[in-house]
Each structure stands twice: as structure tokens, then as C-alpha cells.
Image (cartoon, rainbow, N blue to C red; front, side):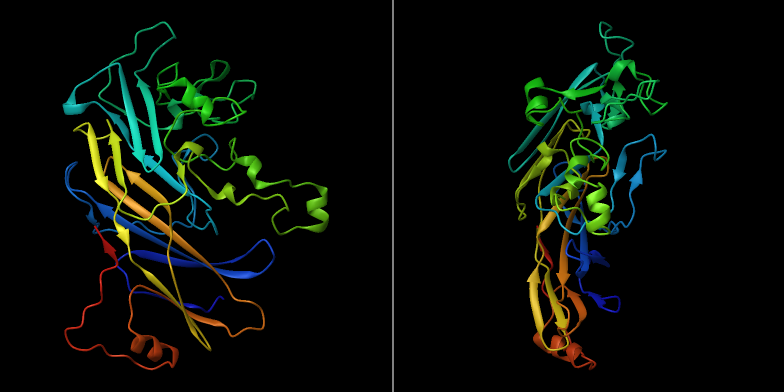
Amino acid sequence: MFDVALVNRTPFSAATHVQVDRDGQEMLLAVMCATFQAASDDAPLTLAEVQAPVRDLDLPRGDPTRSSIAFETDLAPLKPRVDVLVHGHATVPRGGSTGELEVALRIADIDKRLKVTGDRAGPRDAPRPFSRLPLVYERAFGGSAPDGDCCRENPVGIGHRGASSADPAVASAMPNIAYADPRAASASNPGGPQLPAGFGIVARQWLPRLPLAGTYDQHWLDTVWPLPPDDFDPLFHQTAPRDQQTARIVGGETVELVHMTPSGLWRFRLPVLDVPVHLIHADQVRQTRWAVDTVEIDADRRQVTLKARQAIRVPRQSPPLECVVLGPVTPAWLRARQQRKVWRPRAGATPPPCFHP
């Protein structure tokens, strides 16, 4: 698997990574990131000049021990559902200011509304007016008390036993971000505590994500290590809050972001990816296709990145996988590649597009 070539014939970024699955079988993970850009709130998405890279490391917002995760690695082997993540600010339209603002995300069966409030010194104080305020967990309910007791759903937030935000730049003594409807906050975690409000990544060590990693006890050490425990749940790889996960994204869905851009409403349609994947083995060529499992939206830059992955397993003693080809190619190109011959395209030939607006 370490010598499998990657041929990327798309305008998107892509990478491969060798891993071992839960059965101890070596596999090759192929990941693709397709980034699109809108010039304004009423303009369509077009291919971005700079494509977001495939991330091989987590990127925290600040001190890794005291901040939320801005971006998580893209090297998860499987996502059973689709994560929808949003980065940005609550933004008062037309440069105005207010003490309270409702922001919303709508796509497919996701309809999430949060209430954003200006800084306060106490629960009875009037909020200070703001024009833009970061939508980060450092401004949501949570935090860590001086004696070390922390809100396991959000250790970096505000208000848990009087805790201050882990971000020293946050002046408010009260959470800035909450669910617009308290009933939605409880419904997002049935049977558990009310979850902190946010649109970003839920870190691996936070609840309710952590228990999905399974049980790492003496039995695991004695009989399973270094493989995942028997009760490992692949939903552990989902990075979005539960109420920002959906079953399927195929492209063409309408997305609405409310009060996260200067106009007050950014509405757009997701592009449809059309990227075949050809797996060239020593004895055959197989074809498959991507399924989008992550939609990452940067409201500040009006950028959208669609992410997809393929976990490719080759059984032991079978002919090896030699090359992974992303994008449209002709049968003649594939035959030439399989036979290690040079292929020259016809003059004027252009490949079909890899996406549709």
C-alpha cells in the first residue's frame, strides 16, 4: 500500500494515507477536498482559485490545552453520516449594531437557530451592542472552574460554576451564544445534559463524542490492542454537533446562513461533484465514486469545501493495488497506465467537468 501511486486529474486537492482497519487489515485511505467560492451573497458558487488542502493534523484556535478545535484532520477512515460545519461571525446587517441577534443554518433536514448576545457582566445586565461576534465555543456555556471541575461538553466556555472563558480576549462573564429555543438544546442530546451552542467542531475528548470511542480497559490491553475496542462506534469520527449531521448530501441542496454575512442572508446551492475513482490493480481496473461526507462553510470568506473519502482494502494474497486515479479518464488512458505505457491525448480533446453548479 505504501507504493500506490495517486493520479489526481481534478482541480481539487487530494491525498492518500495508509492505515489499519479495525480487523487489522491494511487499507489505503483516499481523501478529496473540493473548494468553491462566492463573490457575494447573491452570486453562485464557482471553483476557488486556491483549494483547501487535505489536513493531516488538527488545528486548534490557540493553546491546544485551552481552546476549541478550528479544523480537525481529514484522515478519518469512515464517516457514516454527513457533517455540516460553519466558521464565521454573527454579523449585524449593513454595519449596524445590536445587543442580541439570531443566527441560523439551514440545509437538508438541518434547521438550527442560535441566539447571540453581547457581552454582559452578569445575568441581569443589559448586553453591550456589537456589530460582529465570533461563533466559537469559547463564547458558549461551559468552562473550567478554578478547582479543575470542568464542563465536559465544553471545557473552554463561560459560566460553568462561574468559569471564565478559556480565551482571555473574551470579556463577557456570561455566555454570548445559546440556542434560540431551549427545547432544541435539550433535544440535541436526548437523555443527557443541555449541550453548548455552536456550529463548529466537537472535540474528540468532549461529550457526547468521547464515549463513542469505546472502552479502553485491561481486556482491551490484553486481547485487542493495538486495534480499536470491540465497542468502538464509527460515529466517533463525526466532528459536527449531532444536530448538524444529516444522512446524505448529493449536491444541489440549498443552504441558508442567516446573519453571518453583511447582507443578513447568504443563500446558495451546493455544487454536484462528478468525480469517478479508478482503482488500477495488477490484474484489473475497478471504478467507484465519491460520496460527500463533510460540508465545511466559511461564512467570512464565502467559501464552501466538500469533502469525500474512500477506504480501499485489498485482501491479502490478492493482486496488489498499483494506482488510484481521481477524475475522468478514457479507457485508452487506463489501458496505457495499466500497461505502463505513455498515453498521448488527441489534439483538442478536453476532459468532462468534475462538478456541476
